[in-house]
Length: 324
Image 1 (cartoon, one colour):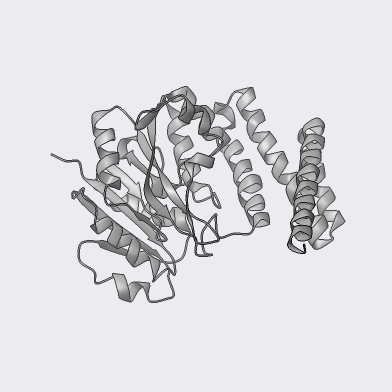
Image 2 (image 1 turned 135 degrees about the vertical axis):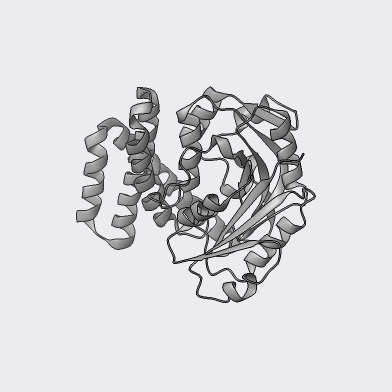
């Protein structure tokens, strides 16, 4: 018997793209699917378009954020395997079949796949090729699915989250406590850390591009300005992750997260000075970073200054070339 896969699609005011996401689930070559669409308080025509559709379970709730929407779907899930597809993304027809086959034949807690990333110029790019955190594992393997053991997962996911929700299929039994509603952006990151830091965990990923990640200006991550990402993800979400898992982390792992947090504080301070001309708030952010580690704060400031100078230099060169 093929295991039942519960697919959760959370959506908010995406009447155009959510239908395409649903259609990509219906076109899957893997057929044993329970499809749940959770409408997180949409004010457009989402309800009229979806509530009467056959072959899916529609849930409407007041707007509470993406984590709450996914948890509402989880509460209704019957499958032993689980996947969450964002309503602006879509899967290739063989996404579930290939992911489920690997899960069924191996003792993995979850698997995730590479994707086509939409770029501002309308092109589709191979995302994993440019992911610096996955490169060590990609270079040492040429097999279709690259395995990651418990230690590797711990190291990888404390540095970054290489598997956004749409990329992943997991065992229901591996989930510890669902998606964390306290996180602004990194609710999926927190879900995976729950698994990885609670017990020994195994996973695998493939370089094959099995889905498309769209950008429509409403994305939780890609649709935000850089300063919003710094504030919500690098500062607030990282601080919450340290609070949640602090007692489970080694000194080296905590230091890694603290450096990420301090880099966010320094970058936000730079934004407050340059964009808002607010020296008082900028100094408060610097003081927060200095209170953790003076040396790393100075290092982060130096690197940020070099990066900013490099970007201005490249812009100047490009401007001069364009006038030749």
